[in-house]
Image (cartoon, rainbow, N blue to C red):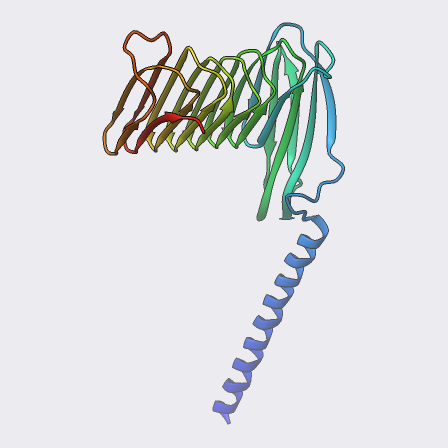
Length: 265
């Protein structure tokens, strides 16, 4: 009889555990349904406009995807910011997001907490023409387009992509790739762990690309260039016409990866 009692007790204990687990799963699913949102579900983004006093804007972001756009339609002296929330918070507090402008520095912050949390934000920053922009991103990707004035982008962990731009460029990332399809005459890029691919629409005055661990590819319009290359572990392929007296200087170096300098298709 004692053996039967122990068996019944075990069955009851197992049943109780199963009910508890099922209940916990139900709570999590309900929370996810109530609070969650996929990356594209935020159809009502927040918008704000900030005044810019000078001619240089610094964008300081810690953990969000950024899109930086320069356009003729943007009002002079006004910075327009749109923010989308992406992700979900199942158990815990809602994400704490802040944005502020002081001394022409736009600061964007996002803080998520909770037992189970998966949240992020995307910001689009629209600026008028004639503005120099410096972007400092901690952990997130950056896309930029439309710049005729100097643009500087630095990320700790995230990719960088620039298009439709003719102003001077300085692009750096610690862990991520760089892609630029531009008509800039002065370009400098640096990657710690990631590839760099540059495609130029005009003959540049200077291109400098440095990589720690990743390939470097530079596609140039037809012209004669003064080219220098170096790689610690990888092949080198230079197919553009070369002349050591050329005013068009191209330098491509990487620690571990291939280097290609070719004529654009």
